[in-house]
Amino acid sequence: MMITTVKALSGHKLEITTSAGITAIFDVSPYLEYDAFLPLKDEDAFRKISNGGYFVEWDCGADLSADTIEAGMRASNSITRSSMYE
Image (cartoon, rainbow, N blue to C red):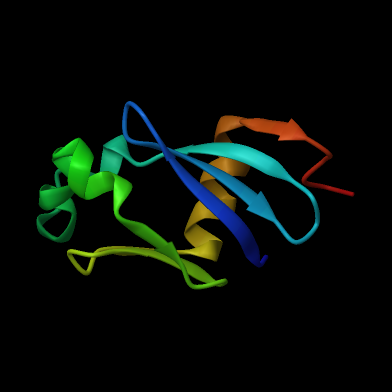
């Protein structure tokens, strides 16, 4: 899966759009207890995100792979357009 756009939302969630046209919400909250993600508890730090195509990364150095995001999207059924399985 390739990430084409990522947008930080309130509540430590990301709106992710993939190259397949899939848009979904990914909840980062479960990761905020890990050391690398602690700075992201601050909403301003959370909004400082960049898209690496196959990963997303924050200014603090925390990152999530597209595979991790895809697995989370499938598990949560958070897809808002298209179908993950087409």
